[in-house]
Image (cartoon, rainbow, N blue to C red):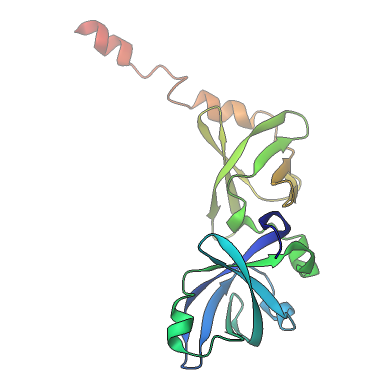
Length: 193
């Protein structure tokens, strides 16, 4: 079995499908059809990644697939898998996905800026209609930046590191707007009492 550091979150089983033990899964990929020849995936059960061999794979839309697994042949057996995360070995990522930012699962990754060094960790991901935003915890403040080149230079899933080149002054803007660095008038209220 692969160690968790050798795999990457690929999707999640959302519900059962039909009566033959198939499941519907949300896949975090730009091209779900690229994985039609996939032989197996790792399913997270009780915090362990267990290999499951795929017997059926059908794309339903851009982000959903129907999966059938060997030895899972009933709705009852499939029900036990609902909610489970799906992982792929990193080396099996489709070329189109290798460069994709798999933003859904980089929470906790360390942010290292080319000029400023180690800054903080990714705490959230926000999907806007036209842009994907990363949120980083930096000196107790949430700092947001778009997940686009050249701001995000690369993401290394093996080391769990996001290499950035943040715009000059971005961190200063967030720190100057932080309640901990702004005079919010509380001192005057406390002095009056």
